[in-house]
Structure formats: C-alpha cells, structure tokens
Image 1 (tube, one colour):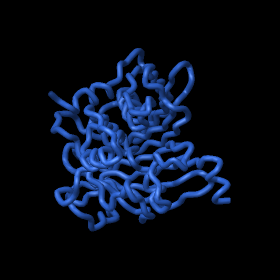
Image 2 (image 1 turned 90 degrees about the horizontal axis):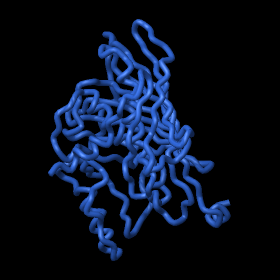
Image 3 (image 1 turned 180 degrees about the vertical axis):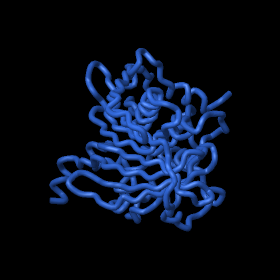
Image 4 (image 1 turned 30 degrees about the vertical axis):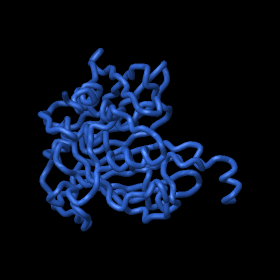
Length: 292
C-alpha cells in the first residue's frame, strides 16, 4: 500500500468557480495545518488560472492564522496582472470566513540570458547519513515514548550535523538535509514543484534555534511559527522523488523572530530553487526575564 499517495491526494484542490478553489487540510500532529500543505495547495490553485506556457518562478507568502485541521480551506485567486511575459496572481486561503494565509505568485514564460549559480557546499551524501525518522524513533523510545505508526511526512530525510535531542549543544546555524519522496511517482513538473513548495517549509526555522541549543519543541519557547515564506524556482524539470539537498542558514535571530535562507540542489549540484523565511520564536515570560 502506498505511503505517499494519501498525502498527495490531500494536496489536490477542487475548482468551485473560475477563481475559487477548495482544498482539504492535512492532519499534523499538533492539530494545525502544516504551512507547506497550504503553500502547495495555493500553488495549484493559482497555476490552474494561467496558460500552460507560463511557469511559476516566485512566490511570497504570509501566514496569518493557524489552520484548523477539521475545516476545508477555500482558496480565492485574484488575477492581478496578465502581461506578455509575466502573470501575477494573489491567493488568499480562508477558513471560517477569515484569512489564514496569503501569497503573491509570479509566472514567467522563460527567456534566454546569462547564467551562473552559487555552487552546492561539500556535504556528505545521503547514503552516508542516518535516516531522520529512524533517529527520532530511537530518541522517542529512549524517553519511554512510542513512535507513531502513521507517517505524517511523505519524504524521507537525512540531516547533516543533526542536533542531539538527548544532549543538545549549540550548533552552527548553517546546516541542511537531503530529502526525497518515499516512493517514485508519476506526475508533471508542476506537481514536483508543488511538493518542493510543501517541504520547503519543513525544519527551516530550526536553523535559527541551533546556536541556542534549542529545537522547536523546546520547553523554553512559548510560540514557534512561520511568519512569512518566499520561494524562487530556478529550474523547471526536476524531481523530488530523487535526492535533493536543502541547505538552510539561520543567519539572524532577535526580537522574538528569526530569519533563514535556503538553497535546494539536486545531486548534480544544480541550484533548483532558493528560499527565505522569517519565523516567530517567542520565549516564555520567565525565559524573557532570564535573558533581559
């Protein structure tokens, strides 16, 4: 039985009207909707309103309210501009009559120009790294907890320089992980792009916590959430059921927020996409007093 297909099915959106779509929420362990899930559904809704020769090259998102995993999500697409080379769409995701998320997306027909990229860093290959899911299962058992049988991520991931959850120490904010879908899939380049949008929100803000020997579930933290998210696609024909390296760099943290940058490379070292995200990292009151 497929472990990936049910999650892919959850990502599909239903077209209600020319510019109106409905998607089902995913079921995250904290009862909220995963931000990457909303990004992927908004990408599909917007893409369904543009001609096929236009390809999504950038999106800029704001997360405004936590999504509820028991309510459908309505995606309202606003066709802001249709030009000869670029199209712009704004999408608002709505639950219970309130906006939970908004994004602006730009589509481009693609043109020829000069080319260069920042090369991929020299990192261990995925075959030389332990699987993250297996590692976290061992840690849970060490704390007397049983790992969940049902996976909530369709990707397998292998982190470099992983934070030791049993004995956390400050780490360099520059890190990363390899990921790929747990199964090979058929699908268009647009589907693989949506899945990259999905995972681009996963474990991104953790890079901002590494220098402080923290993880998102650290008891010193009151609120941890993505505030905004940006993604730029540099290539079209890539697959996320092959290994992709996600370099993450939590290069500033302060004032209860963190800012991270990311770069996604295939195994040949081609830069596929770039990302940026600001997150909310709110301390509990007693911790604020301790650092003030």
